[in-house]
Length: 571
Image (cartoon, rainbow, N blue to C red):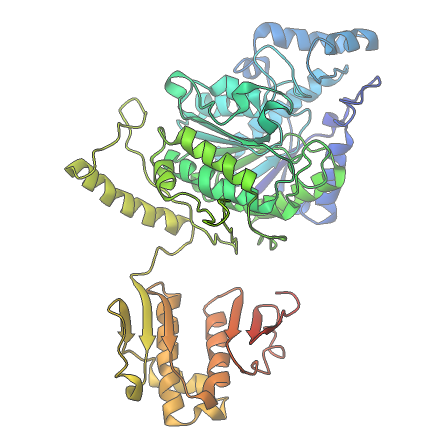
């Protein structure tokens, strides 16, 4: 199975016919520039290309009223003046004689993508569409949006494919209030949106965009709003939001399908968002979402108005959907204090509905005791460098979370045991190792064995097979002596235990004359186990193994010695 790219050139037909500075940014070049960049990078050629079809009136009726659909159908015969008058009845909308056709194609593209993924024809895909959809409501266009493409696709997946749990991730910089209104009382659809909010001072200026808007009736807890209260949010803020809010809830929800309202006005350079997340960040976010729903991810383009930033971000997302490695993230991976405040406000609002967030609330995100400011560093060396706290949530027959279990009772203990097993399983899905059973081990040679060790430190007595040790030692004269060879066997055995997830960290003793050679073997052994990047820190004087660059490892190893450091090019 591969990746689908759904598109139709007719979606470039609609354009603004009068002067309107607010609406002029939603232009056909948004699609043509993104498609050209995909072609230039050879990404379109690697996708299964599907031509978008028009959504039927019945399919549009899954979300929109017949009267609204009929109104839009009538715009095909209107003149420019009539179109401008009708557009003025809505907020930040313009109509064109081709709008109805373009909007039906946009909705139909989302439907085609969902059908292809759920039929198993492709693993995932992107519908490259306009006009966008996530602001559109049952009987109203809004914010450049005509038909709610993602909402229609979700309803279609429920009706035609029998899905019971659908996750919608809206990373557009504007709140997708249209999707929220449509599903706010539906516990079968979990809607997550982050958006520029600034305490209600940013469009669409809605009170229900704040963190405490969590759904209604049976849908309580299935609307998750993460408001950004200042501009300038970057890679660390977005990753932290995924790790500390979205992923814990999403794994607990266990979706059968992930729909992405993929708005790239949340990327760097966009005049609407004024955020700092780089295009590469969206590759990482996409990879994280592919861990859900068996990788069934359907992305549908929403906003994005800086053509260069939009096209690069689209390419990054498609690369991730195709399975390409995500480029390293740039910039400091420390979230802004404002971002952490927003994340914690979501955790507080959602904790009554999600056990995973109750656990996170108990642990907290951490604070700097001196200043009182939050201090959380995010590392993302793909796969994840920071594991979200995940936990299954006991649910009632109606699908709602069960009441909290009393600590100490048998139900609580059984649930706790189940939590541990589920967490281990989920971490395996994330390709993360759970906490190793041994925190620290020490590999000592015989003369050092009399050292007194703390009770929680394991004295590792094993050693690598003699033949393996000799093979690694053969290129190094310094390892020919018996004591150095014995120490190397201990190091290799300890390294294997760490890489296999049995030991978290370890200490080994080696003769000073063999230290550089032992380091060289340890580096090579780690790389042979599939390690992507290695950091070597030498306290004191230790020469860097001289032939790493010659063997092509310079892009994978960084050595730091004493007070001076040297960062190898490409690391």
